[in-house]
Image 1 (cartoon, rainbow, N blue to C red):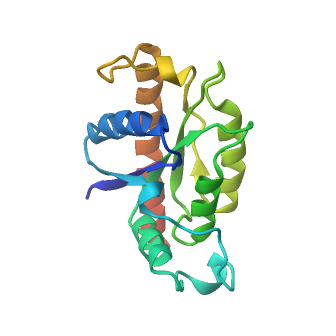
Image 2 (cartoon, one colour):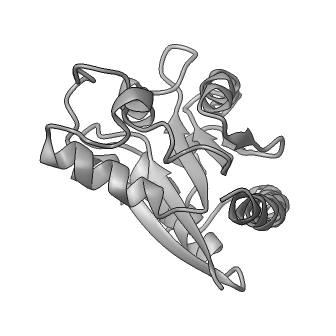
Length: 193
């Protein structure tokens, strides 16, 4: 049975660099044998700031808003995730945090890999450090290996190809680890039902 991997684009800004980054991640992940990959763009799920009457752990997906039901239902289908995030003010985007907050059980016991991007030389490392804390609280398994695209505006050429081949190498390491963790946790979830 195929592993269902969701690439989640964690920016909704106009003119965002994340679209090109997410397309690259999606294309690379789609090459993995035994994976069904889907790109989830948070711009397609205009979630308001979380305002439900109880926590996601309390109401178990029974949302008042249709967009929340649709997003959380889609997340529940995933076996593993690649979170594509910009770095804003040394952290990840508010829209990504809000999207993560909408689910709970749907994220549990599943792996999370990270691809970050920023204009600076660190490529979003600080955003991923903070994001790891959040996914642990959601009972996810954050992967150690990540891809950090520094100077994101120069990371791709005019045809969308990477200008720095080392990112391909890092991506391959991350995808290999995500495959292992996805299989292991999927098997574990099946045994605990």
